[in-house]
Length: 267
Image 1: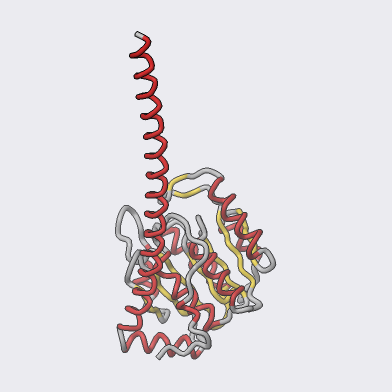
Image 2: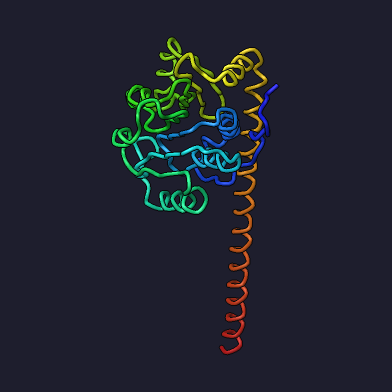
């Protein structure tokens, strides 16, 4: 059985936005933070903030002393395309209001941000930037020395084979040197252990998941529930907008009919 003090991974996330690819992995993000209680979390590639704010929410709710850092240009890349400043404005507003005391947004390139962290200082490193093989390999190898003994690296989009996505290929290579647990649903997420000093509770979880596939299935179901709730909420919002638009059109139509009758009588 999963043995965390509060079973925080059943919690509902508070801050969700498009795109939805990371949403099904949020319960595991909650579990990881609750289990590891990391001192430092660094995310490379934040975009709209679904994964990052899941980390931050769990840090705040569990009253941890964790410091969180999100590194991104918030200008897009070859896979997500370019986008305007509204994305960063929303992320920054949430961060300022909710998490400013322990969270910092670093609007810069990954290679520039790396100089702000000392070797062995990062307990959880989440890599979710450009997803070509060369880009992921560069992010992993250049940032690996910054990860602490027993630290964890998360790789997103391990299941994506379209275009020139190469995370799956790089993950296949590093399985020879690192203990890996993959969550093969949605767009895919991999937990990579840096070395042999991994926290015993994390090792126990990995072994349990390897023995019993239902462990992974549990996180998949919890994540899909969050995604379905999100889609249901968006659908309700769309229905309300449609009803409002329909009411406006009905009013305009009624006004036009009244005007037509008035003109008819006049003529």
